[in-house]
Image (cartoon, rainbow, N blue to C red):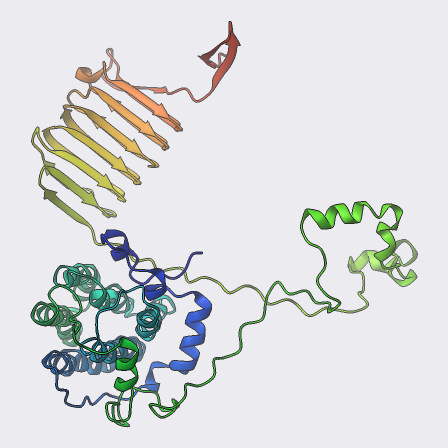
Length: 502
């Protein structure tokens, strides 16, 4: 099942992955929760006024909201109505996390797979999905870069579910900075409020990191002598602890502590049959059952009325329409899955120990790496870019790239190209081997020193190898074989290249 994954990238990177129930409810769940909690828009939530709490960590979180999130929300509403609605959802997610924090600091620790904990994080998750939806639904907005900034940074609220929140939070600040830089570039000389908007937004990440460092260094601070989480959640929602009328709860919600409203009816089954005579056999069993009927298989066909026969009604040929006795109501189409919820990491080029990592570049033509012999270079998920590696390095790997040019001097080992399309590799010095796997539309340019390079291919199409022409110095293109003939001779399989002559 391809659920909406809010913290998808963090799940992959963490040693102990989050369960999907915490961070990725299904679409139907999102709709039901959104309809029962959020109403028609983010404006259903009033401005929060937090009450004083006994725990210092709770007081600090409330101060963080009032000093950073609330001013950011006010400025966003001033800049644009749509942006204000999106940031309202973001702010409401902070409020929901505060409710959970109040219960956590009074409870004994539970695993994040615990059913009570899974249920407690759903409201925050639902609000973050609304943040993403606001971005996807307003792609033509003048403030799309702002909307993207908030959507990229919103999953930072997953800090509460990891063991290293201090290092987790800056990851999403960096992701958001990719888009806030575009905001500054676009509005720096047009609207001074945008400069302040970026400053306030990025300030939230710094404040949240400092807060986590002081109160939740190794993850959520549970109370070893506390009560059960279920009891703490109930008490945190009781009238004594509930926010006032101007708090974050929607005006249409029931009074705190009362029974929850009934869930909305489940969506209609889009695969439900129109007739009500009972379920019929399905699959191959139904096929064989019909075949066993023999001539009676046509007994269920409707007799065609004379008025519907084209050969007896020539006028029907002109319209190409045969009237139907009764029009059946159209079946509802399955809901479309949101198409832009997967976040793209910001581009980076950095050296980790002896490995250069080049990732997520798009449209960059001047990426240069000054390498050394003990270093290797890993290039992944780049598009429309050119990467030049100067000096002799150990090895180079090009993975999941599209329309990327790679220029290398010399290598100790070789170049690996994996799952890439429209790539180009130029060797200026000497490279022992080049391996191409599951790739298409590639060009390899060999220099005079690298004519002895061994090239290995597998599951690769449209690969051309270019070598320098001795006469005019230009490159001469040769296509790598794609078709092979296999024969069995003497009990052994023999393979030869199919050559097309003429």
